[in-house]
Amino acid sequence: MEQQMQLDDPGVFGGPIDEDRLRAYWDSMSPSYAPGADTGLVRFSHHRQHGAALRLAEPAAGQSVLDAGAGSGLLTRRLVDLGCEVTAVDASEAMIAQLREVSPSAQVGRLETLALDTTFDRVMAIGVLNFVCDPADVLRRLCRHVKPGGILVLQVTEWSLFGLTYWINYWLKGFKPFLFSRDWLTRMVRRYGFEPAGYEHPLPHDLTIAFRRRADAEG
Ligand SMILES: C[S@@+](CC[C@H](N)C(=O)[O-])C[C@H]1O[C@@H](n2cnc3c(N)ncnc32)[C@H](O)[C@@H]1O
Image (cartoon, rainbow, N blue to C red; front, side, top):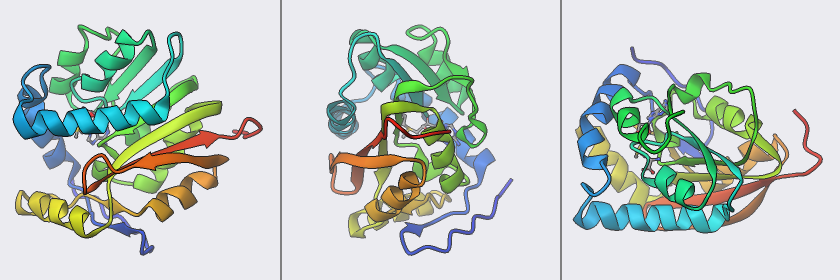
């Protein structure tokens, strides 16, 4: 099913997302996301991306973490090794099947309907926001799952010249992911009581950005 997305804002580019096609794509990609199966440039990219995410999230033993769009759990495993209590969610059944051995509570679910009955010290959405149908609403949902004083970490492909190169690569495969500017992400999450807490560019087209929820934030 192809969903139309209207984001009348210069800080966003891309869409609409064909969710059935995309889910089939990520199912087919799951073998290459198996721990140890990522080699060469893919491994280098994961190393850079997850390193930046962990530096910005500053996770500590005993903290609760939501890994939203967790894939096969490459980052989940590192969080579990640090002693975090991780809840992992991903739309791909094939990805989640690989994750259950490290996180038995891992759930199949789309971020478009994310509504867990709890909040977390850390919420990580690494490499997933570009692929959701309604990024503004998914951001709202992610924000609502962060405890006051907690940290939200997003890793996205940026709306930039390098990001556009990445976008063309997906477009050639029949997808139109969204690209985001840092300014757009910041404006969106400020609405929910978040302040910028740092960012990195782990790869030329990637932005990893952290926001801390104000201690007095409500809702
Ligand atoms: C690039 S992978 C990133 C996986 C993981 N976060 C990592 O860093 O290794 C993107 C993941 O997002 C998931 N995904 C895509 N759209 C989604 C959606 N709407 N809701 C939940 N997960 C989604 C895919 O199934 C895939 O596992």
